[in-house]
Length: 285
Image (cartoon, rainbow, N blue to C red; front, side, top):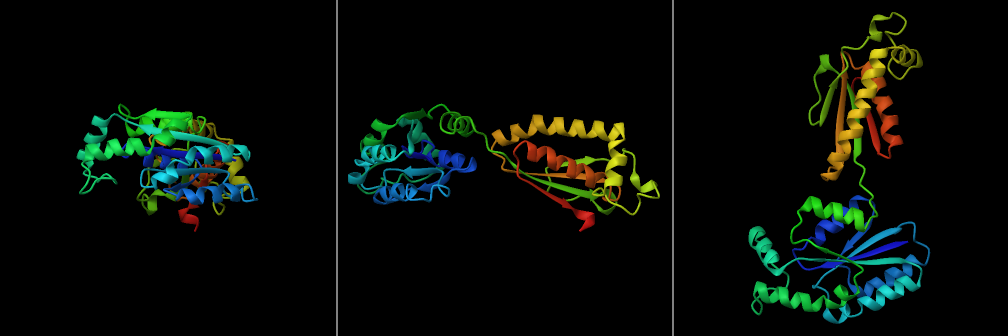
């Protein structure tokens, strides 16, 4: 069981941290009232660990100050119950935070008639001291952008785990038009066409005789290797940039043989590398 309490100053990147953890499989709850946290901890040890195997709780200064003082004790309670509990605290220089609020025109949760922005930030630091003092992971985001913060979260909190993008593979026939709203389009019309084989013409790329015909083609095998190499190199770059979904269109003339088998072959490759994959054959549906 893994529990991460995420806290920090407003504007320091707490929402980014929670979204990043959610992307890599954490069940995230933002601003959970702390009196419920103890009940959650008890529930986790009462047999629902599978649902909350990795849980992240966002805690900020909106919580009652009396409750914030109890966070260190709750952390110890979780650890005593065998839960791996970490506290991540995000910080940034006051000047940086004030600039961020000015640029985004967001309102600090503690500002109002009684407190200016600078006063609200000072008050927030005081309120969050109990969490800051017990944090075993700290990240200063003063000089980091969103992408760098995501990388830091994955490396320090999630032990280097990176989110795997969900892949939609779609085969299609060029003579019926190129699909819209796709990220990549690849053209297989230069490869040997089973359509011109009388005994294969009525079959599809899902049928073994067509698969054997294409597997016997050096050109088809080279295209498959090249596509696999391309995706192995570039998809992690998209994942690092925060992309969760990618749509790949594979086309041949009629969308019946070559594109269908290539999509099925790539499905196996992606699944072997840990991706969730959906395959759609437009011309066969």
